[in-house]
Image 1 (spheres, rainbow, N blue to C red):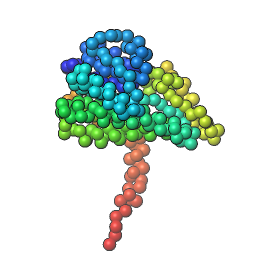
Image 2 (image 1 turned 90 degrees about the vertical axis):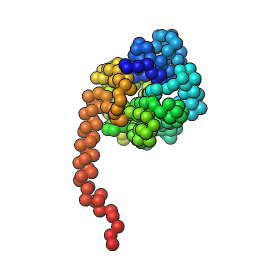
Image 3 (image 1 turned 180 degrees about the vertical axis):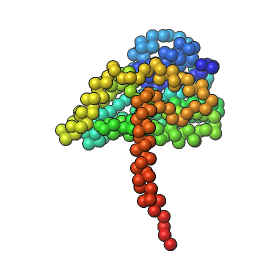
Image 4 (image 1 turned 135 degrees about the vertical axis):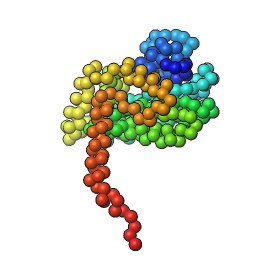
Length: 279
């Protein structure tokens, strides 16, 4: 790591967030880590130092997110890297999940990310520098059956990141959206994954898909420590990627999706191009 930075990380009490916090503190970086359960966060990190500031934040509350960003700026006098990691999975078909469940998922996975970005941008614009790293998922590129709402939130994170990268480039601010595959975190446990409480028997294929995913818990091929290191390293890049796939499975699924899209687009090329007014 080339120099000391101030890092703001959401969802820091487990998974990628916790790995990031521990690695950064070990490297002497200044870290503000947020969670809805600060005592669990402090216990998991296991370190008390002037470089570590744990904060309670309700990301679905714009005021709470803004206050956390302001505290960070007042404490460390800059915010160099924001990693929007907080989020959770939600399984079920659109028909099986309630409006409330859908909106709660978007509140954290999408609007929580927007709340943090909206709050930090004035500070990054003022310093004409910064790096925003948004954690999406390979499900936001190549979703699987039975995960429509989760995929929708992760599609949204990719879309907003792509446009944000263009919007802020001239101000020296960089944006990367990360799409991980399956990593050995707590993602497939009830702490991070909500499943439909109203399964419909006609969706047997979806139930089978969910069962296969849940059986992966503890056996995922990805190492979260390697993922955290990769994310830390791109913050030192002069020209970091806008899109970053993490995991062999993520790369494979993304490349397969590219092939499917190319085939479908070309198959209907003549129709697509025939929409102009005549005369």
